[in-house]
Length: 365
Image 1 (tube, rainbow, N blue to C red):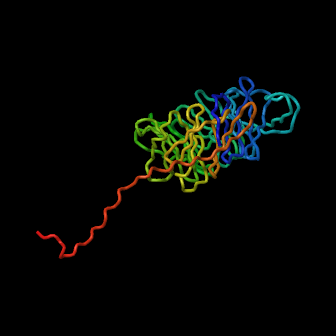
Image 2: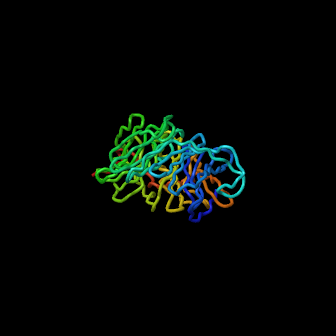
Image 3: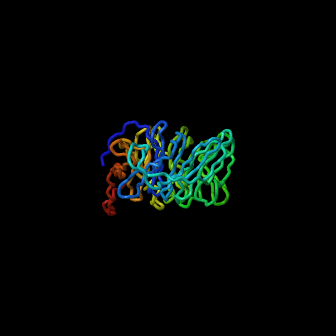
């Protein structure tokens, strides 16, 4: 499929559930921001605005759940407050995107976290099961993982407390048990694995070199493929490895792309990490596809209005969400191009076999 190049846009990012059924973003601009849920699992994608009485602040975050509700994190006075939003009935009054009929928005408060001095809070990527949601809170030299939805109790629940300042956030399994975080301690950043079912037991995950900064960017639990950024080669480079493998991390020359960030990895490739498709955002609006087995990066033009993210299907199709004035909620589907065949090396023909010489014909002297 031919894809036209995109112009630089300022559209809000979109967050997609692990199964690709729903997505959510903070739509609108300026002082007219509102949550918007996208339904991607049906025959055609469509968006539902979820406005409330007051517009949302620009630093609010939204995340879809597997049941179609949308989690929102807001800064309210001296607290980081969480709530679930969902469409509830219809009304005929104005809506953020213009006059016309639209849904009412129901809201279920989930409590909050006190905003201490210097505390930063953000939502972690959607959990694999789609029913739970987590937030990362960093204060001083301590990091707390909070479960803010899906635990059946009132208010956020501490799932883990780690010494050090943590960033990132990558799920390592399909159950939502193991979470990878990039932890900074003593001036170095190393990815660690946190077991959320055992009170936050921490184990090392990446240790490429003693004095290197090793961050985990993405993981494919089915195949074990890991996408890594490390300065172990002498400068920050993109590399890949396999979870639980004794083989070293590899840093292909083809991944030496300026400001390249992986945003989607193909699932379903059980025990075949080399076959996983990887989608990368290059710069502001560039798009590239890569697979470890190919050793080649395909640079493509992104669709107009691309929201900078996407999702692979197990069959190898990459779905890219976009929004334009003509198509407020759209999807473009790409397939992984076929890699060029490796060069053919022609070896010299073998020498003919030596014929035994009868004794009477053998040279003498």
